[in-house]
Length: 215
Length: 160
Image 1 (tube, rainbow over the protein chains, first blue to last red):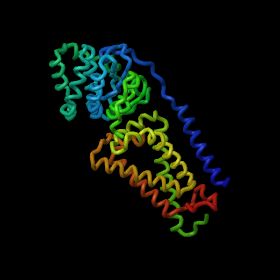
Image 2: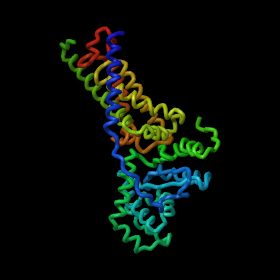
Image 3: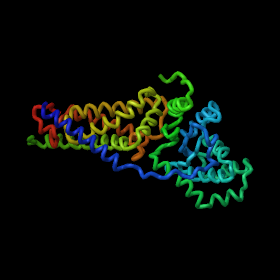
Image 4: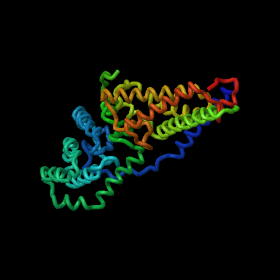
């Protein structure tokens, strides 16, 4: 075998070895799953399909995924539960406030209506310097207790819960939104949810597959 | 190898610098993706609607390894011509994909996802970097130099 070929194989093997060693070394620190927040869960607790979603309220791709999530819930009623995790991206200026307000709405059992409103009106509040007034309008529209809501906004435990959820996502190597885990299998974005994700759900439920229109 | 004229030193220096730059970018780009779950990159690829969906898993598995190994070969100066052709071709392909996607506004992620979670470059910044790497690859193919490279140890092999 020519010397150069042997050297080339040696370089490749060494490089591959370094990658595998780094992978072993760079295992993310596993965070214990957070106590389930029932207010941020949609669908029955014993549903066979569990979708965990890490999402950001200011992220347009997350907004684009909402119709796909709703379509799945409609197609398989009672078979799917969706668990929402806060994952405010640092690049999004308004996300911390939006997530704080949503978590406070959750404390009054109105997370999902607040969630839907935040995404539905994202293009309008997403361009404001301070969208608090818009969020407070949502609060009034939902008939939430404004005093409780205001106190919640100042509660450090609420902020910590949001950070803990983001930390949990980071420990799972989530780095973009929306990221879905369907019974533990990872899918990114609305396209993957509607294609690979939907196929995975059909497989779990034993439903015959649809023809793949993308091919 | 003997470098006698200043112009030869200059050409060798430029070649080395381009090899280290482009090789470094490719190693970094490949490595950060290889150290993350492969689904993260597959998800980014899925957002480029110009790529057929069924190719995404294959590309998500193979591109990071090709980038990483190409980068290693370039930095070491081993089979430089081949590695430079591959790097230049890949960079040109990425630039074309970005440019066409941007022009058609066809399903674009906010960030290209080229460097995993380690570095978030905008699509325009990445387009510029891809073009630089494409030209770097082309230069290394057209103006080969064996200075500070493993190729110098294998005199009977390719000139690059």
